[in-house]
Image (tube, rainbow over all chains, first blue to last red; front, top):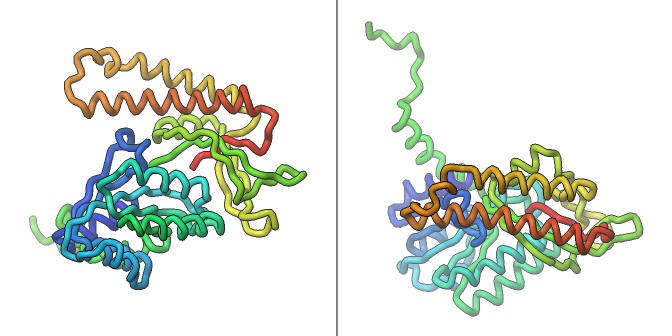
Length: 172
Length: 137
């Protein structure tokens, strides 16, 4: 759910970014928790915020920054390193989404050594086919939440009103 | 979050400690939160260390199905199937109108049947292999 809040904040700020959260049942076997749609430059900025650094290879892979890109997010809500078995599942799911150019694996504290090596290798291989894959750790999700905190708080205030000290309420 | 039960064969040392990288994923089954919560409530999972390589230094902690609870897990999934079959949604399956309703119901059956087959495979073909585990990922 932390990722949902972060992506919602990003969508409020970036007009061109939209997302769909799939139900708990209907996309489970496809490895999709969220679908993203937005300009390439917006999705690149989103990934760079999570990474805390620029991602020139991602920009190169996605090409024209103004074109609309489809993204898939597979979220693992875990406080441990993700294993190579899980990375392999994420990679295998890429072929189920032929029209999706950006595939994000999110969650976990990091990847195990083998998983990281595998991920890097697959990233290079898929890049040649115009597919970008990125990993966002729990730390990256926190970075996103911090970045879009103003939008998230603003949206909440719009729903429930700003906090008010009861003593300030002079209405009788 | 998308979750899977995975039947995976890991290399192991003489003490049964499992490690990457030469893993063999035999079968995976996508599961839903309801099924995971049900199995968790029955205390069928336990934490185990998965070492990052044969040096057995760094590790991550994964959840695996308890070896002595495989039969109980199959009973639980069978009970879930029975419960699902008794729901009004299944009762009205012939009158379901939307593709989403049908797809969601199919996914629920899929989660139940695939996880059952996976755990049954562990019981039938890998019961003596302690490094072939059912992990939740």
